[in-house]
Length: 487
View (cartoon, rainbow, N blue to C red):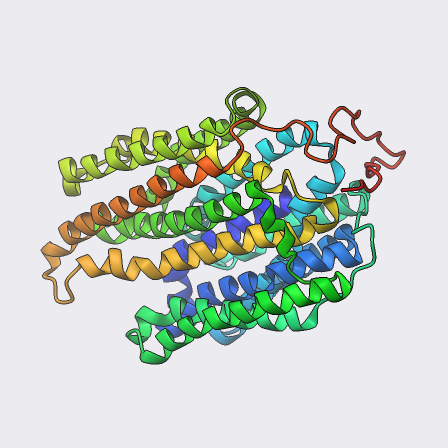
């Protein structure tokens, strides 16, 4: 959970500190783009590979390598001497996060029996909600405090003590687990999935800055051909030696396939919302970093509270209806926000945003935690790393697609040559327009959720662990992993 929180915070903490980084380092606009995009690209490109490495070489081992590397990369970011060093360090951060993050879900899946996993995924959902808004808030506080005259650097250096604690406690308390049968790393699969993701995400990340060049569209179309080649190759690889990078048989599990589709679509919605929300408050309403950061606190609290309740109390009783109610609540919160933005215009206050944000937060909490459980519930343990990597990757892909769409749905509603007094109203209008798109995404999610089982299955693993007692603690405080189950 420490690792998951560090990653979520690091994705969002940088945006708030960009003005400070620009002033201190003299970074160009292109360099600033790469400080955020470099992390996202390296992270997304390495997630599936990182998950598979955990299956093969041990999830605890790869997790510790990842969290250690992430901590070192954070130090390099904090002490970067120039923009180029900061960009390179951010890409290293993303690459090491790709080793660390997939192991979080796969370790949970391998360590806890099915009847206990709901509690853990409830906690995971709460961490997701906390991390989503804590990044901007921490970034605002650390930048404004200017600790020891370091300006923006503490936003990265704060990871050092957290990473060291995570490394020490992870080594002591996490038990080792890996796929029960010997697997080999599929190098051609790694090349194809990395190439396909870069061909898709790089043009989306840089497209607006470069004026949407022709080569960007060619690259995105070409990525579809690479993914098609990947599917053909992985199918042959599975039949030849049983060690594909992506276990395509997972998509025969209806809950997994539907959950992946929801993750992708949900990522698109979140990618659009969080960026336009920040732009609306800081550039449209001209709020300071701290005021914008604290506005999100009600949202964060609501997500965390709803996530814990949804998995432990609501889903066992109401099944997928809980997730569908979450989608409807998020859409209702968005519609209320659209009305408020139009009603109060430039005079809107943070307290007036609290109610729609709470409604949206409760809705998000009802989705994120049980969705993860639903996606992984039918996955055999030997493929949990690959499945976890896929879950994270499609969410990242969705977020990148959402960020690409922002240039169309948000900046498309803002004229190029606005008078100073027209900037604010233009941003308000663009914000409202963007939220209509996010509400549409949530309507799609509502209907896709019908593909999930209507009621949760208590026994997801062949009946072996549905009623099994919890694993007994080892003398050193670790947890004894359950024996591999036959599927």
